[in-house]
Amino acid sequence: MRTLWRIRKYAKPIGGILPIYLVLVFGATIFSVINLSALIPLMQVLFDQVEVVNEPTSQGWSLEYIKQQFYNYIMTLIASGGRVHALYFICGLVACSVVLANLFRYASQLILAKVRVRVIRNLRQDAFDKVLRFDLGYFHQQHKGDFISRLTVDVQDVEQSVVSGMKALIKEPLLLLGYLVALFSISPELTLYTLILIPTAGFGVSVVARKIRKWSGMSQESMGQLGGVLDETFTGMRMIKAMNAEKWVKSRFAKNLDSYARETYQIASKSNLSSPISEITGVVVLVVTLTLGGRIVLEEGVLQAATFIGFLVIFSQLLNPAKAISVASAQINKGLASAKRIFEIIDQETSPVRSEFAKPELKSAIDFHLVDFTYGKELVLSGLDFKLYKGEALALVGPSGAGKSTIADLLCGFYQPSKGQVLVDGLELNAIDPHLWRAQLSFVSQEPVLFDDSIRENILFGLEDVSEGDLKRAVQAARVDEFTDRMADGLATKVGTNGNRLSGGQKQRIAIARALLRDPELLILDEATSSLDAQSEHLVQEALMNLTKGRTTLLIAHRLSTIQHADRILVLNNGAVAQIGRHHELLQRDGLYREMTRLQSF
Image (cartoon, rainbow, N blue to C red; front, top):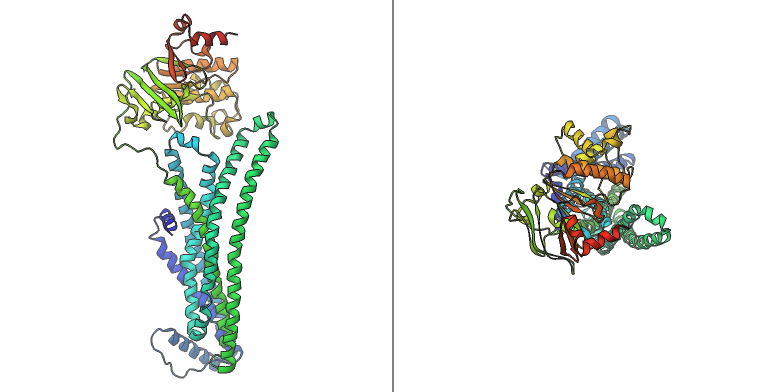
């Protein structure tokens, strides 16, 4: 119930909607009861059993008084126009009440749809916003497919839970109450007899509901794993086909699919059990009602046959909201299991936000002072100590796993050092506003991230109020116009998922144009040309020269030929500084840099 109450908060503002919904549901209930109750006088007119009331015994607007006045009016119609005239009136009353009941019901469903859409929008947006606030390390520990499953499938289940919850807590109880009032007005004794057996259905359904919640949680976990397998498969399709690994991938998918199918079957078997329990209980109660009511009609003569048939018709409808509540209970429990998974994301602790941040301003240097960094139990950086001066191009080289990309991540503020400090002009980096700091830097990686949008939007990448002149200058400096001029749609050309309609060089130049447009104070190039052919690399290198001119730049490279123009070269080995100097200086010394240069010269 606590989770359901928490979901309700996402429907805000609900204060103005809830009273309208209650009024509409109440109206639908009243007219639903009227059109069923009108069957009793209808049958009495047909069988000539209309009760004659000479003098009303009740006063005011009680049910008994309204009933007596109604029958007096029916007798007046019969006296003036015959039973056919009364029949027309009752049929018209039934038709009007059916129309009005459905109008009220439709309007209430529109209100419910508005609440449902508001809940899933706010819940999904809240979860997505929280995901964007997670540290980068959190994504290394989680499956991407699980995130997608929680934000799509789980939210969809919560949507059904909200609808079922609104019905189970408001609509169906009101309808149930309306039918009970009608039944008590016909025969309190018979109504009390029949209500004794109904709670047994609730007990059976509650047992089923607990089972459903357990299996729903397991099913959603499996769906997340299945989404992860699909994401990995589609991302690595080229490699899968090249390595003839279809059979292995198929086996992985089948294993996860079998697990999901097994758990889904368990949910279906439990969910489908709630309806038969309600149905069987309803039939048992109906049989008991027929037995008791038949005895009252045949032996005691307290009820007329027409009244008893009307009682049975209303009672049969009483079972529908009762069954709807039991089915809603199963759906709510499934939705609660999904909501729990979503709230696990929303409630996940993120790094504490400082109340005050300093404004970033690089005037002198960025100082890595005796920095250690541990990833899990592995020591990635150890005692790292160097400075990156303003306006300097500093290259990082070293074997794979030496810690080059980790330094870039620390510089971006994605992680905090395990020991030591990263200082900007003597001020700790974690004391600087991270958004303002990242606004002053640009990052160009080996695999640029492009979105399924136009080339223009991928270059702008969220920037607003950019003039066409600035955009054109960035496009020309990055040599993007060299290929967009040959495209029919130019900058409006769609790049496809992750830029799959473009070559590696074209994607890299778009990333460089994106960096140029931001006019960054600090530039990080993480092996920006390592995956390009010679011709593409030449064009990209020209664009990079335009980009790095006069900027503080951190260059990460495996290919040493691309960093010979750097002001200084930092050679890393096992997470520590092995050598530092200019290209020609390092070549004159024995050490790792000269060995790497010799190996690459072949």
